[in-house]
Image (cartoon, rainbow, N blue to C red; front, top):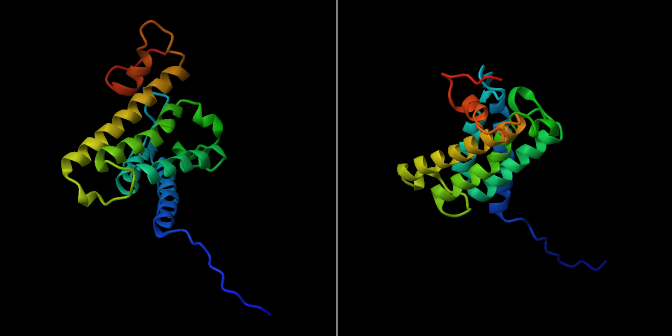
Length: 179
């Protein structure tokens, strides 16, 4: 037998850590989705998924955070009960919470770029508090803006002249909308 040395190209450590982190953070976001409170003035519940989005952006950055949130959406679309209150399926992506769900990958990329300025993974301890706050505020703005637009589309409020019930149902607990 003629034995020859053959090399195996292994995946570098950054990719292994990124893939593992993306999977773990997608799972964490799914767990946080179970912690939800129905909001009486809106068809979309209040959940801790946004906390998951913030943590993903903080610890994984733009590149791997975006991968994590896309993985989260795919897992929920194929039937894993990872959406609010254990909901699953592709229909949930196009329901009342769809705008919020589709905003998660975009928000994570925004958070990563605002805080770190590039797409790599970093430690939040390496940046100042002002950048952390700016990144999280920018991410929250993306989530709520796209969530409200998605809810307005689902409620067919996009074509009304006032376009107000979708905005009121998501932003003002003191004045409930008239359905």
